[in-house]
Image 1: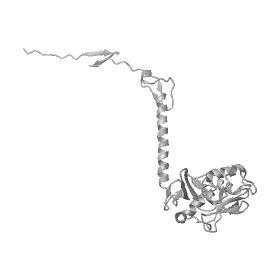
Image 2: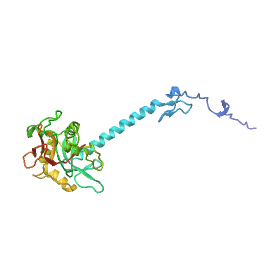
Image 3: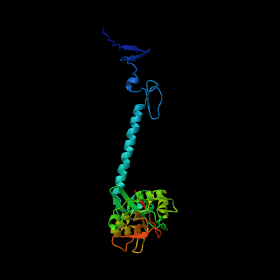
Length: 266
């Protein structure tokens, strides 16, 4: 007679459940795994074995997400600025191109590139205004008494802020007109009265800027265009554009009515 061999599988009883070839495993501790908060938190992780939450991890995730977002903004800004050159068209989405892109709205022409940022000139004059404050020297503004000095002033928005802080629109209408200007993609307060150096930059780059203005349907400066800058000469005068002079600058009495062509710093 042949012997019959029987293999008996061992069973282990764990918590009232019969399991084959198994060993009892203790439930992990939530606190040991980093789930230490007894209160829920937005974006937090709930322990799968209890009612504890890990909020520290959520905070770290938020911090990393914020850092990534800021890095993406810097990368996008750098890419945007690399595509913006003097004479290129600035659109309402703050991108640039040398030719008109269908579906986008041109709002200015890049006229200045500097270490602290770029500035774009509005496509048109927004009217004629007095500089204002004849007889008053704004103490916070530098007095530029030579065209060589004025041509190095690029602080359009810094100058404008000082002028509007010195008086309301009835006293300083040119600066206020630029300050209140807006376009698609921009708001009142974004635009400024150009500093004298912006006109010099335009003068020195006329072919490029004028091509951009033509492509975008804007108006070019001529030798007879007098537009106010935000650069002060003294108590009675301020600098303006004057392309009839070398360097593109002239000086006018503050009670003269000249064009205002705002700039956008970006």
